[in-house]
Image 1: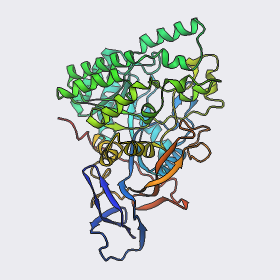
Image 2 (image 1 turned 60 degrees about the vertical axis):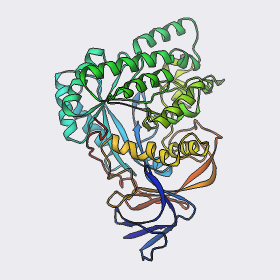
Image 3 (image 1 turned 90 degrees about the horizontal axis):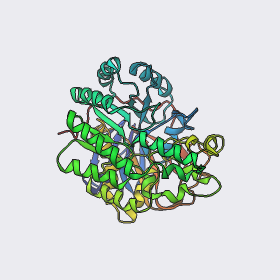
Image 4 (image 1 turned 90 degrees about the vertical axis):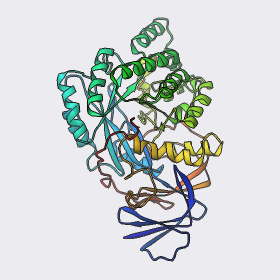
Length: 461
């Protein structure tokens, strides 16, 4: 079937232009001069609205095991919520357990996601067990369209990798053209600070932030950059939250090193003050790295403007307050780490446009186009252009909304942004040419989403 989106302002990372968009089947067929006479099976009126490429959230954790429980969103509920918020592609993490193989892990995550996603999806691979077998399997993962490998400098005894193990994996990444993603916090030092806090009776959620100081994120980021430089490996720093870490990334990029970084909406809008909320409410805001003092926020916005921060993802990893976050009452170290956000990323970033922090085009770039290029999906995704998948969002820049757990679609019993008033709202969402969300509700289907085999990072020099 053909579909015509008419009267809107088409916004790509390269600019904005009034145009009508013709969709034929699952692809964009043409961009037309406004009002060009053309018949279509269906017409969407986008007058007064933006027409933008569907969002790509390159960092989600659906059904993720953590601390004896699982993140609350399944692939079905999480991708449905993503669609409601204008995100039409997610890249989730397959989590290797110690003693298991990468390929069996990938099979396990395919089994979780296949036939259960409302929008398209891909995978990164978490490497928690570096040995000759897993290093060889990295090659097979790349052939299977999974070419990004996440490692951890945090969580000793669970995901933690030594510098030597990181070095080995980075060498393999260099050989294969793949990219190492790094959770950069000094986990050895953090564990000592946590133990000290608990021994002194400091057990409230705010201690999660105080025992993971920004200096230890900055140190680990610098160390990861150094290891990447020694090996020649590309490096992508996930969920960067601190000015110290951003400084290290900026210096590396200024020398031309293949270092990239993302931040998340929670670090742009929330702070250590939220972790300090009374009556255990602060547990809702426990994630790693932790929320920082407010002064870090302006530095992160600056990083987005200068492209030292290239992408905004959510690290969507929701745990319900009741029965899950409450596991850490009396011991902040037992609070499951993670926050919900996949549904609100596009709106929260648009608020940055409203406030003058970023331009309209930069909004599209950091939420869709750059992740498409960074993770080997462009030009199929991340652009409104002929031949691209018809992943399209019609966005009303003047609509008013208030974020609330009472109205969101994520499978979690609270909102990290409860009561926050925003300007701008998703109006209509197409996933590969199919209207999945409009003003009347959800029209998609679990199982519509397809697995995306990804090419290599397009930014490598």
